[in-house]
Picture 1: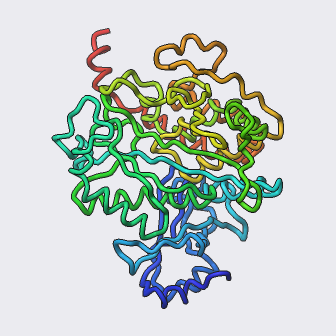
Picture 2 (picture 1 turned 180 degrees about the vertical axis):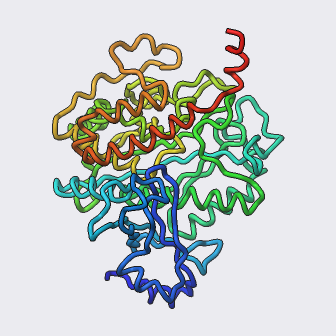
Length: 435
């Protein structure tokens, strides 16, 4: 063992460990383990019943074991006697292929064989609301264009600064916090890292933000579109591929007009090629499609894409190149599974490299006004059902993750869609009661 968790517990005065995993719906599951038992858990894992989580299992399946990764350990800054551990799921002595962290590790292993390391950063947007989520918490936050509003930001200083202080304590190197484009909406940024570390931090950030908000009597929501008239919650991901040492950015080419290498263009081509099939993972809820296909919001823009296009430093496209050596994928929303998001980016990118996928032509149009001028660009799906059907039949994703894994995901999410369809809305009553 590279790190002995029992010894770490004694040195850091840790009383309990949260041995956690994320299921296919992005729900964070855990067991609270006393420090006296952590040595056995580190070796054998914490036991779970897979059917009790959003995993494609039945009560007849064997025990599921979450094997904690000692390198992921985070001591809760607001409750230092508790430490959090990300885990990999195992069953019958083998990793569970249809578990999100394993999905990502498998794709990273494929990249590693080629001598590549993917690095990623995420921009997590969230709203601070009242306890039941029915309204934003700050009743004075009413500006038509509230983005970067200093007063609204400082009225939530207690929450935002506490989250940032925690990230500073954890060594994440946060570098800015701001009020976003929606009333009551915020974003906090920290340094990019290897994709697995970023996914672990992304998972913990959501838990930490919700917890701190609750401690202040508020609610933090990453829901893609919690308010119809306000900008939705995106989760943009910045991506680059480096050599095995992590010192040379293989996406960087200073001689190229966009600052991108041939490798990065092929990677980009892979994302473009599979973009519509990636939506069910990047935009995994019914509500997601009210963000990427939304009309203009109160502030005047949705800041979300609806077409498969790429550009330079232009925020109206699905993929933006903000500077040389990386690109920003603006499709993902706040509901995306932190591990699956990075895993599916990498899978599509690796396919693009292997098959030299065409990345198409850069567009510099304002897609919110001149989108009609872009010809032959695919439109993003209009709803979760369409997205799931595209994922289900996509050969790239089936080859990357295995047909069984894709079928499991689609099956569970299709159940969610059918559940949604069973609800009768007020809109239906108002518009079709007398038809």
